[in-house]
Length: 460
Image (cartoon, rainbow, N blue to C red; front, side):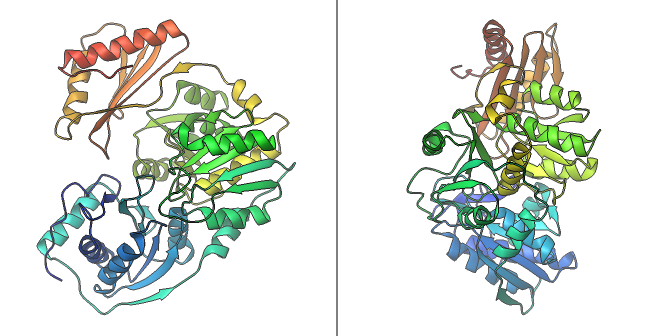
């Protein structure tokens, strides 16, 4: 295979992602398989797992990736259609030397991409850029590889349920959104003691019922309606490849990622007193305060599933999470983001508590916050904007700034955040206060900071 130049927009911080027929083709997929396979071979590896989600373009992309891997002399284990956590699981269970998941995640149907593991560690940042260098130079390893098809669904479900000790039975509604998690959810519901109703488990890359992104409330309307109709204890939703979770409580309200992590952290810290719990910089101060109250060590870290997994390995944290719904359990599990495992742990925990999920949620300190605000900013400018805002803030009195990921500004009114997205040409902002008046002052300060560096603030 000759040298290949990837479209520069597809090599992202955490994965490779593009629009089929515009910025991503089977030729790109083949070159990616060859470049990643080269890294595996040079790392001493011989076997790679490959999975794909249910998108219409995924079979073609998967075949091309496998072709590229085999051209490096690797043995490829083809898992077929599966959720991303199943691909991660296969690397551990089958002891392969890496894995590639073909998935567009929560993006529109015409997108697709690739998430990778080298060994059992995440593959991101400079590693992804290195694939571009290898391909551009045609610097490939060569050999005669092979492939086999392996069905790991039963083994995966066995592992999910291995340590579960249920208390009372619950009424649970699941919304698979026609994403890749559907088959494994069906299997779990046949074996997990509770009353289950599963919506849209059929894998369909056109997503005929609603878009599979559980962070968008409109995508949860079917789930909310079914939770109400069945008087259910909770509802669970998944994104397109099953690594992000959405939760609805028994009153039909969204339990956001930081609220979910707060609930999960209480149970984990009972078994792991004093442990570190990691959350991304967008999470509520309530989470960090409650982790400390539960006897844990709260750690605020940078947004991004690969960055969180790396920090977990460094600190030994048994649990971490992001506002986006990535939940990572190292406690009794592997440490990767698996929405179905997170759902099972939530159900298990609730089954041993007398309070409903809504009562647990309402007992948390009540704060007022904005949703995550995303507004366009050119890729060549977005990081400079954040740095200029940070410099401007250094001259302001009465503010405390954390620069773990962008700028998170603490004031007596609460906090506001401004950071550059690593995956899109946008800036991300959020504000949180205990009062409406305080929230308005935080919004004003955010707007003033953006105007001070020549940017038009979002309509907040």
